[in-house]
Amino acid sequence: MVAEKVKQLERENILLKAQVEELQNLCGTTASVPMNCEYCRNFIQHYIKIDAQYSPICSGHCVAGKQTKSRRTDDTCKAFVRKTYGRNHI
Image (cartoon, rainbow, N blue to C red; front, side, top):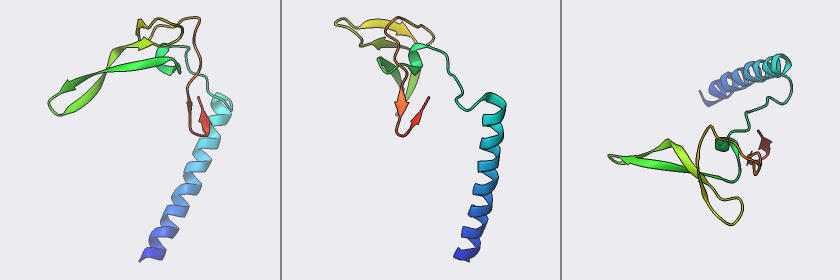
């Protein structure tokens, strides 16, 4: 039973890798993201608490430089530095 599940996951993994490769061929190897604040390493996202959950809002602040500046997620500025996540880069 476990061996069959492993085989199924391996087949799914092969299909997913093929799909990722196809998407990279269509979009280029490094898909670009906009230079918006939400993708910047200097941007701190703001959240709102609704009941027991926190949800992101379209606001935050920039920590580049000495002063923090209020920013919207779709803003951009001269201090933009692309976020990195683990081994993958956006």
